[in-house]
Image 1 (cartoon, helix red, strand yellow):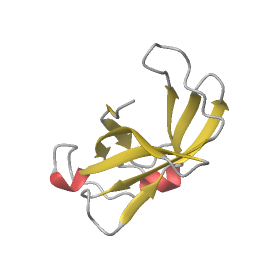
Image 2 (cartoon, helix red, strand yellow):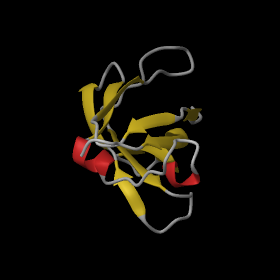
Image 3 (tube, helix red, strand yellow):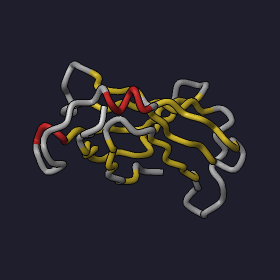
Length: 120
């Protein structure tokens, strides 16, 4: 399994819930039973500050189903420029799975575009 590329648009101040179904190369469900997901948003790949930590809800481990989430308060705390094309509105992220044996697999990565909120 190699990481998939998926860019995310976040509306600042809104809840984020991305539903994912993991599959093996043969399209069978990827069993998440012994895996723990983790993921972060940062300004750049090596930036020392974590702008947000995703939370995860495993909805069916044996069927490889989970939700990647951020609360409205968490998205509100991510800075944004005037437009999503503005450098101030662009971040990077990745999602990894850690197995109980210590194996780590990156499953998703991409760019995060943050659309500034007017109403606070």
